[in-house]
Image (cartoon, rainbow, N blue to C red):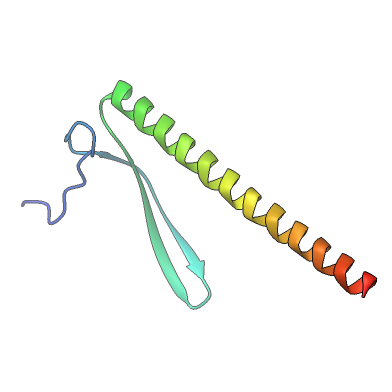
Length: 83
């Protein structure tokens, strides 16, 4: 019987291997998560590096937004104190 769905690596095109499947309950829903990796270890290392780089970039942008909001609140407080 043929699989209904194929999860191919976006870098090399090989079919990814399922490593872990787990379920989480979020509010009233149950979500099934699947972790898969590329069978080519070198390709997977590159993918992992790209994911880490993107995650770090996202965290830096989020921290920058928080810092800007904090500075804006401080400036507003200074203005209201000075009247």
